Length: 182
Image (cartoon, rainbow, N blue to C red):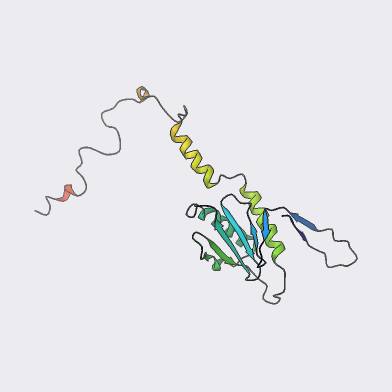
């Protein structure tokens, strides 16, 4: 579903030339909230009626998606769109939510447009980075493949009288003090 946002100029003589089109995988729910599914780790739900934005982890990645959620809310804070002190855990496992910034003098301002533009900017910025699924895949791949740049042959390691970080002449931590107390 494509959502088209129009930002009109205040002068009536000009044609509205400031039209911003945002293409997101989104749907509008029955309660008026907008759910956005473009991000690889999290789903973003904009709830204009409650002046709130909610991020929900996709799948069973609840603990691993915190960093994506943190980056998202930090991005919105830098844009001035959320009150950063209101970021808190939601009632869904692994979710985070925050209150949107509203001007104190006028509560009838439509905040949907600027928030959707900021969300699309964030998603475009995050596309080149690896997601948690890619990270897990890379770890498994690195464990089971031998990269010649990262491995050495056993014979190439020079021998020496002392190797490693643990000195065998030192007693274990608890045992070296046992004779002090006798």
